[in-house]
Length: 309
Picture 1: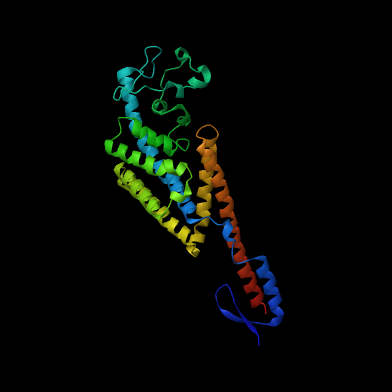
Picture 2 (picture 1 turned 135 degrees about the vertical axis):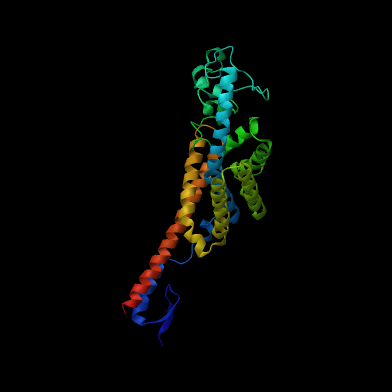
């Protein structure tokens, strides 16, 4: 009696004995199961998806918002304190609203050029980006604009530190920093359970809604965030739909790894670990993608051989 085998379409077809060796050979080249040890566990996947959302959804929304508020603040300080032409020692030393000291190390390459010799610093503040750096620690102020170089840590810090921002949004930013961004940066995967994953998306959505973006921008941002929240569940479920999402997740993971590499070069030591973890995740995701392609090719080859009989 002839043996029966399933094609990739799940249809039973009679396979002549002389064909079985060819099919077995193809199947050996394209194994159907990945080694479990090469997969990411659920906590790691949740951590990864939240990191992608922070980097690719939350940060772009915050950049636009921070830019608009800092531009207003900058124009006010030009009018009231001539901050764009000030010189030592008559420069503005404290924030007029909060009284905190302003950090001029972070602008005009002052620290690198003059170290602690503050009398030689260039105190002219030429734009809103330079103004923003006065409110951060020097190691957090390496960005060159409110663009991809300005990450979620700096953006949240600016909202929290500058009085010009709405108190409700300052509270939201503090929650996101303490509950999501800082724990994410420490790479403690075990704390990223289903409850923390769900709570993280709730906090990020609240922040976006409180920004009072245009109706169109808010809708697009929330939809993108919900896409990732749902995609994360498919990614965790290991369904065929999860595999279809793999290429997008791989690209976002690569972008996140590039960002972490840039940050790790001159700032927080913890980003060295983030960079290394993401590089390992990239390898694993690439292996899964290759496995998926191999399975598809194997089934296709089997179908072709069966069709030719």
